[in-house]
Amino acid sequence: MKDLGAPSPGAKETVDLSIFMKLAVRPLRLKSWILLAPMALWAVAGLAQNTNVTTRALSLDDCIRIALEHNLDVQIQRYNPKIAKLTLDSVYGSYDPKFNAGAQQHFSASAGGFSNGLVPIPNTSYDETFNAGLAGILPSGLNYSISSTLDRNSGDSVIGGSSLERGFLYSSFTGITLSQPLLRNLWTDSVRQQISLNRKSLKISELGVRLQVINVIGQVEQAYYDLVAFIENVKVQQTALELAERLLKENKERVTVGVMAQLDEKSAESQVATSRAAVLAAQSALVAQQNLLKSLLTDAYSNWHDVDVAPTEKLLPQPHVFDVQQSWVKGMTMRPDLLQQKLDLERQNITLKYLHNQVFPELDLVGSYGRSGLGVALTPSLDDIRVERYPSWAYGVQLSIPLGNRAARNNYRAQKETIAQELLTLKKLEQSILVQIDNDVKTAQSDFEQVAATREARLYAEAALDAEEKKLQNGKSTSYNVLLVQRDLTAARSNEIQALANYNKALSQLAVAEGTTLELHQLTVEVK
Image (cartoon, rainbow, N blue to C red; front, side):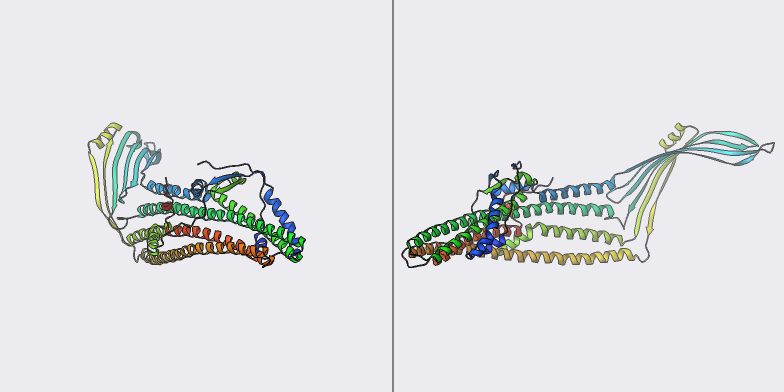
């Protein structure tokens, strides 16, 4: 899916929520409104300055798909399996054979004797050596070395007081040497240990991607539900402002005809100012929530700066069957962080296996076989090797016992203690998951009950306002009482919206705690 974009002429201003939220719960005195007026005008200017905003209607599933493609945390986490796979492949490189080759010429001269005229005559020797070979290790721990050498010798020798030139003498050799561990490094060694450790690390990194995806989906859900709630809360505050303005208009008419005191008109004016401040606070909170959701959806925030997300879904109290025991089973089998911890414990056991092997002495079965050749020309020397004229072989065992062996023994004991500590860490994580799921289930159940309770409270508040307004029209109530009931209704409507948001967020959090978020959204994580 392509990233959504729009032009971005300027940044939006935000409003200090703490001031307005306090003002929304009680009538403003005239002095307070005078102090607030400049801030309110500034907030309106900040919210209205960006007139080039486009609206994009997005469902929750749309937001999740966009986030999984563009969220920066997910993109960062996706590199870990690639790095882990390359690291694993690099360890397999330890089994790549090493080729070596060389050539050198060596000259030496030594005292050989004297000529008949007592002139010193040296012995000279020229050696030209060529060598090549392969060496390496196999997964069984077998070390091998295959080598071939060719030497050509020539020079002068003193015989009977005369220097005689020797002809070329060719000597060649080809052979193989093997060494197979029988105790230490038999069932495991440093290479096999690193391969096993890196295999586990690869799985851990893949689970890390799954964990990050689950967390991002949970964050998107939380932000999406809050955005819906903030949009509805703006509507609630705007409705409250309309009610306050209507009451103020009616009170002015009553003051004009002399059936109401001017003080009641001022109270209504104060409520209008308070309602306007509440609208501004709700709009500012909405802007901040828009930015929060957009930051989760994109890796290029400037493209989304002038885009307002319009949720297409409503806050509904979807029924859910709560079963703590079943949720515990899901958490113990599906939580990526718990599975990571178990894999890390397996890594510790791999290291324990290696350290236990290192306690044993070195006992290696060794053997070698080769063929030699010798001749005054190259071809006869090589023919000797071909027909196996001068074979050589050897076999035996090599034993090496470190006296005391304290390093290996103490490393092994320390690793056993580390595993015991890891087991307790795993148990602690399991217990914390059980507690978290238990708390989340109870929270979701409580939030579901609050949805019904706040709905009833809102209905009662609506009926109470209707009755109080009729009493005011009949002269049996006061404007102040109507203002109080209006505030109660606004609070009840806000409480109902918040209860719906809390319930949906609680279900999302429960899914994250269980590790079932992907399954609920029918998503799979594939790491390539």
